Picture 1 (cartoon, one colour):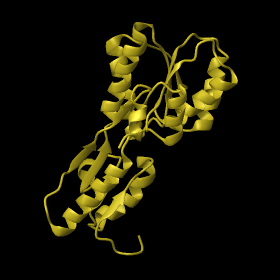
Picture 2 (tube, rainbow, N blue to C red; picture 1 turned 180 degrees about the vertical axis):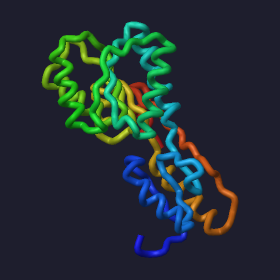
Picture 3 (cartoon, one colour; picture 1 turned 60 degrees about the vertical axis):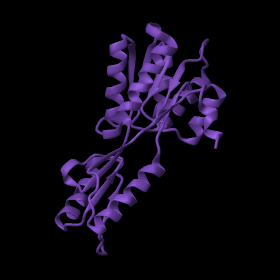
Picture 4 (cartoon, helix red, strand yellow; picture 1 turned 120 degrees about the vertical axis):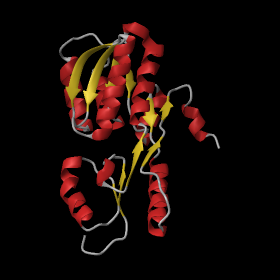
Length: 226
């Protein structure tokens, strides 16, 4: 913050670490645009991904795939990460509505390494399951890593979130059952659009939600379509 800025866009990985910087920006009267986090009235504008809709879509997809027989291992990211909380609550509420059972909750703080270790530890407990829901693709891939080392008789439905390239490749290979694709380019473009409006003194949206897209083996090939 050595130079004066007219508009600042921030995309926090965690709210706690950003608060001191955000406070200084607010005190300096610099308009702040939050990307992938809703800071409400603390900033000029927030742009978020459709995390709630994505969690609901995954829950409904699982119901259509396995029905009430689903037995879910839930791998959580950081407990205070806003996007993860939205994914978590919407998925679990949807599962509860469908009466789908969560048999274990693992904590991996968004890390592939921790997800792999926690999943390996869980596999040693001999608890029956047929689904893994991870709150991001990185942890879903970590769970898949552990399962590849100790393959079950029937490969579980692994559900991720983000739509990163490696997860999409695993989806094509049948090792992931679904992921929710975010649209970071659209979020960035929206942030730029709002920044221009702020500088020009034009009206702008206080809160923008960029919709997500559920990817499954049935529609993943559409990504290659023009």
